[in-house]
Image 1: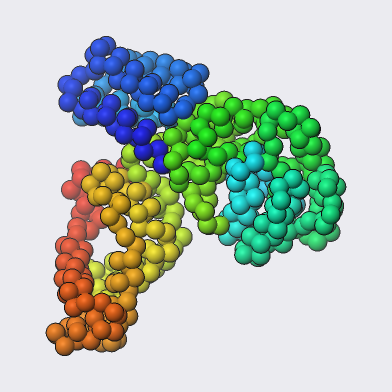
Image 2: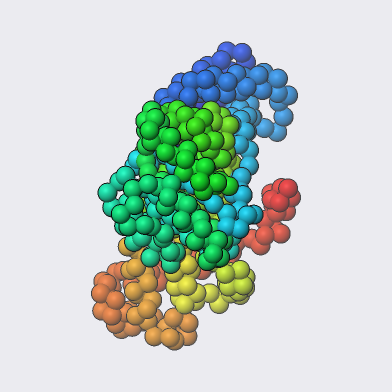
Length: 443
């Protein structure tokens, strides 16, 4: 995602890195290249023009900080302006009403149905709803109702539909009445995909909205369509007054134009982003996180969220104590591998770490290595896992046979485990690390 834009912007920053000061000439060159990078990424022309103007004004009016290089200061200005352009902060859904009603709209194929399900699961997991209901008002696409029902079964959320009904307004009306009677606290309405130029279909959407009276109208935009998604969002906003956008396909070949432009053009916040095909692959849209990713700074915000979700705080503190006392065992190693596996594919996690993509060829990273290590540790006896006995050659051969690996694989595991254990033992404690960094760690 965003690879070409990130690469071009990093080339601009690299050219400024060796400059002792910012001059009118190198500012003009850098700003021109940033503008070209944005336009190539399919950012709306008017948005790009205003963005560049603000950057130029800030760079020329900024008092340089002696401890920060001109190149770094230029990067910070671009980062701050990107964050401001995409909304500055996360914007939560308005779910105070009971039932709260969310209506999804957008073009066909943008991912509305799957994101109804993703959103229902996310809000249920976060405790923002306890008894959600999804409503099948997409009566145009063949099998759309069945798709919603199948996915609803997967996450344990009921789906309301009326067999043979052709009018989505009647479906919405009946669903809302049922939701109130049955005590549903959230209703998510899936609507048919439609072109913004199709007057009949847009009028139908307006009638559905008037019937279900949604508290949130979310436009679902495919990020790979670039500026087209922005123009369509603006048209939908005019007709049904959207309250926010969900950007989908951000794990694909998105050029970044929609993410950067859509909030400025519609005046409505980006609220969520779809980052994969699974029902868990949705996250709150963070302007800071997106700006970090665009500039190749990783995605520490969402990495921390994933870690907090899958790694128990008490277990983490217990692990730290074991590392300090050199009692970290293969059992602990196994627990950490299993926790990381829950967080998602290793490639995706490494991309979230700042600079890792430039240092490690991520295509060479294979999640199968996790399974190999797991199999070898599970083939050990409890005493071996707790390091109560030396892994002599006979034991290593047995572990290799038990896990279906080669003796060389077991030797590599033992060597890498010992190296990791020694490295972690020698890591400076947090307070010492803070002192080493001039007390800047938590400023």
